[in-house]
Length: 443
Image (cartoon, rainbow, N blue to C red):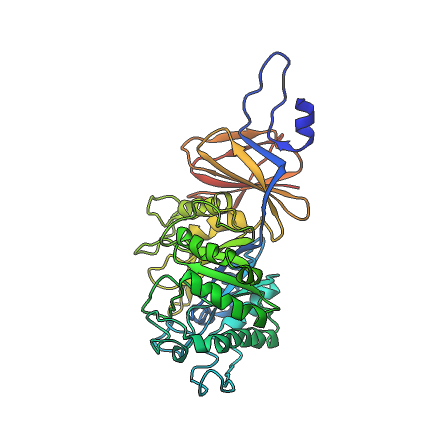
């Protein structure tokens, strides 16, 4: 019987000696129990953060782009989330420029769209991302233009006026067409960001029922793009939006991907749908710039690694999109971009995400995985090329020896002293360092 189990792909089992029971393997992977397909990992650079990157010297710009998108120098990210502007630019790095900032004369009037080919430097970064191989571009609107809403303002919540629903849907699709003219295909389109939270910046409220109603307007107009909903403020709160869409057959027809954030509540289980789900925005709270891996601050690298692991294994998410790729000041972005000094700084948060994103590629499938030691948080994936990726976050204070690794394997570790540093895999064994993230790739 044991021979048959080994044949179907359980990794990590030691050799069995007659008469002696085998100790439990440190990690077990069953390739025949498969979970969600992976769409990718990404970042957002909305609210004019790309202008900070554009202000850096050209050589520094390339280094930052490599850190985001390069598959050997950086994180190899495969999703870029774009912000659809809702109003003319106000204070620096605040609002995004709209493609229709002024009322054209009513919801039935011919639209008067404006396009500068730059979109707060988002077009430039999208083109750069495409050169690295990124194919997934997720455009998301924080609000409709103020004149389409009951509060007359793109900020401070408010709701979309019913008579403007169709015009707003066309506005969103027009945005995707402008990007198509620039050579960027918007693959995923969202019409709301945190519809259950009123913010002093661009924001707009939808109840779950209102979101389901609007989907039925947007879907037929945005046929060539995956409609995404609803980017709720918290993962638990997102379940109500997903449930409302799933309960309406026409709304369900159009929504291809369900999304949620994890500010109000973390990932604690799957959203109630059989469609793809994404954790589409989060960074931890905090009040300082922090580059540490494991300092207990709640916004160090270990925190991010745990959050990604939970999203993948508890939530069965197909994508993880971090907020933000780079920003300035006391940010919890992956990078700190200092445009005045012409420098940037790298946090361990980047390398925590990279431990997953560099090797788990779009189209991969998550496999069933487990660990004998409860201190190990393990996930496993099979890429389309046949390679297997096992990611082990050792939350304990002692190293764990994993033996029985089969095939041509390489391993990379991130901890306080190392960032995706190669570590040896000798005779099918790899040491999983304490308080560290180790990624093992078997080809």
